Amino acid sequence: MAGLLWSTKEQSGHADEEDGHRSSVQEAQHQPPPSGTCRLFVLARNLEINRPNQVFAADITYIPFKRGFVYLFAVLDWANRRMLSWQLSNTLTTDFCMDAVQAAIHRYGAPDIFNTDQGSQFTSLEFTQLLKDKHR
Image (tube, rainbow, N blue to C red):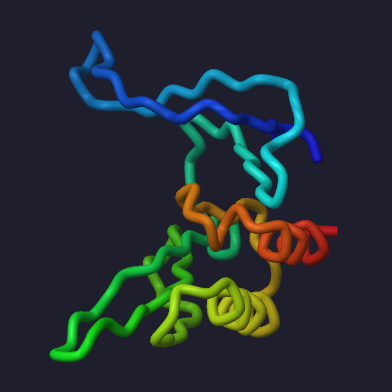
């Protein structure tokens, strides 16, 4: 997969001198990721997102209740801001995230790029292998 790099360094933001906007900078090292995780970066700076299925994004948020939290995982299409799939869970495990990703890909097809943060659910070997298998 061209354009994907392993990285063990964190991303950091900096102000762009030309327009004052914050941008994300990453220094990639060509070495294996820590055991049990997989960190993949697609280097797509200034990518114009102009069609459905080009880029999916996913994240987890929590919904507070009196006796704890419920976690919401959602998959969105960046081009049209449409929610493609979602799942609720009372635990922060990888399986409910994978269920929602599988549902989105089954219904809409695999995107060119799948964007997440570097949370443990998204860097797990199971999650990254799911995306690799669906991208082939």
